[in-house]
Image (tube, rainbow, N blue to C red; front, side, top):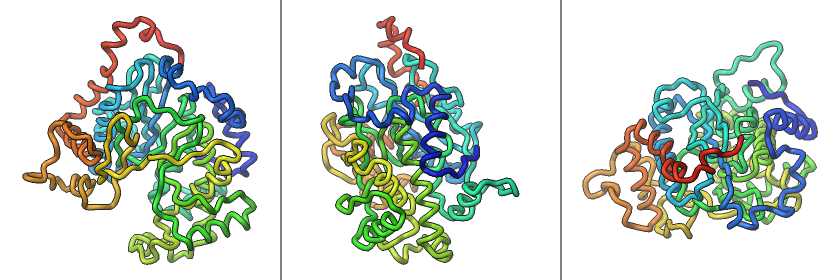
Length: 409
C-alpha cells in the first residue's frame, strides 16, 4: 500500500478518515481530549472491564532465524504475563511482514484474520508490508514513494516504523498500542499496567550527546517546530492510543526522509559507511529513526504541552539484576552486549554447560527472567506455544459466560 506524501495538516485529516472508516473508536480528531478525564486514572475500574492492547512489530524475513527466535521469546513472555493479566483484558500481536503465508508464522498461530470481539483469545495478526528494497518506482510514483526508496533504501531499521505510518488501520481498533522491536520481553509488571494519565509513553535511548541535541534543535528551529532542549534520549519503544502512535510514526518517517536528504551526505547514507559507526556517537545514520522520532514527538506532543507525554522504564536492559516482579520494569530490551542475557550469545547457542540458561524461574533478576523465557521458548514447538497462548484464558472464559459473549471489536 502506497502512502501519499502529504503535509501535516493533510495527514491529520487523512488519518482521521482512515481510522473512522475502519470503525476505530479513537480517531485522530479526538486527540485533543487526551489526558482530560482519563479513564486510566481509575485503574481498578478499568481492570474490571475489557481492554484491548496490541504489541505492534515488524518481522524481517531475510533475517528469518534471528527474528523467529525473538518473536518466539516475545510471545512466550506474553504468555507468562497473561498469568497476572486481568481476565477481561486481551493483548494481541500485530506483525507487519512481507510474506503473510510464511509457514514459520502460521505455525505460531498467526493469520491475517483480525480480532472480531473482545472475548476472543490471543491473536497474532499478520499484515502485509512491502520492504523498501522491493518497491518499484514508476512514472506514476508519488513524491513520498520516491523519497522513501531513494533516501531510505540503505536504512533497514526504518522498516520498524514505516508500516505503522503507512497502514495504521491494522491497529486502529485497540485501546492502546505498544510499538516495539522484537528483541524484547514483557514482564509480569506489564500485566495490569496502564499508561499514566493516558499519556504517550516512551523509554530511554542512547543517541543523545551534546552535538546531536544541538543538531536536532537546529533542524527544529529552521523547520519551525517545537523543541525541548532538556529532554534527551527518547526510547525506541512507544505506548499510546492508536491515532497518536500513527501520527508520531508518520512524522517520524517524514523527519527520517528530511534528515537523510538534507543533513546527511550521500556517502554517510551508505550502509558500507554508517555500519562502521565511524562517527558514533555523533550524528550517526544508524540511529536515523531515533532522530526522526525525537523530532516527531517534539512536534506532535510538544513533549507534554499539547498531549501528555512521559518517559518510563521501558527498554530496561536484559543484563539488569533488578527485580522483574509485578512491581518491576514492564518491558526488557536486549542491547548490543555480550553480557548475560545477550541476544548474540543466545542466537549462537552458546548458553551451554556452566553458562546454561535457567530451566525454572526461581530468581527475580531481570537477566534471569529473560534467560528463562528465552530458553523455554526454545523448548516449545511453535505449535505448542500457539496453543498455550490461545488457551491461556480458556478456563476462565468457560467459568464466566459474560466473558464468552464479549463485545464487538
